[in-house]
Amino acid sequence: MSDFGDGFGASDVEGELSHCRLYTELFSDRLENARSEKTRKGKLYLMLGSFSGIAVALFLC
Image (cartoon, rainbow, N blue to C red; front, side, top):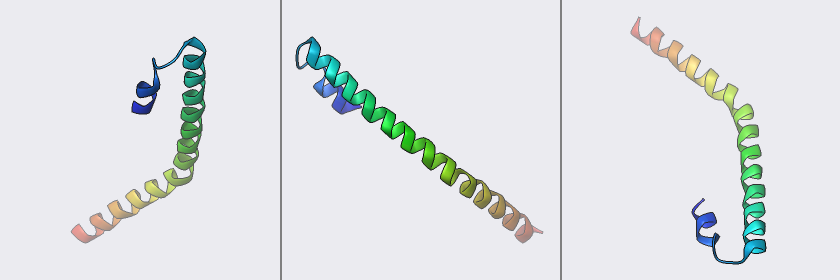
């Protein structure tokens, strides 16, 4: 995000538009990667949390 701010305002209108398009594409790619990683790893974290909670409850009893 800071790179976007560093390059913003450094050229004419067409350069600014292409700069915005470039970062829009970069952010959408990162968002898509984050969503796919969330679906892939979300169930894992849920199961790990559930099993560790059960293990703690068993140790306390």
